[in-house]
Length: 99
Image: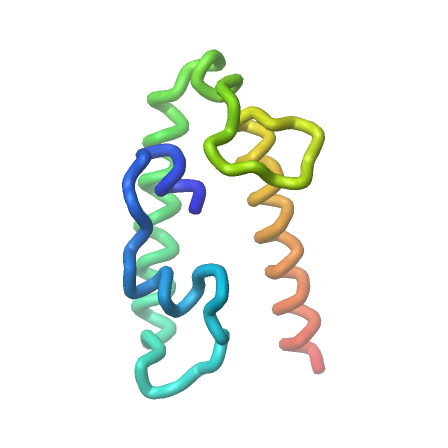
């Protein structure tokens, strides 16, 4: 979501179907292999880093195109919320791995 917002391009439709809002989260035969997921994660991370380097402070201060339940309605507020949200999920995964 961060990359598609920064680049103003749609998300990968296959990954959006598997991981986007309203997806089931169920792992079945259509689910990508862990290697593909890691490759996509790394590829997306690189693209986000490149996009960050092209943005100015003014760009990050613009109003977020998507409203989120945070006090900061700027693009950087939106990104901060999503980073926090993903970190929360990573923490949940680490708990599940221990169980």
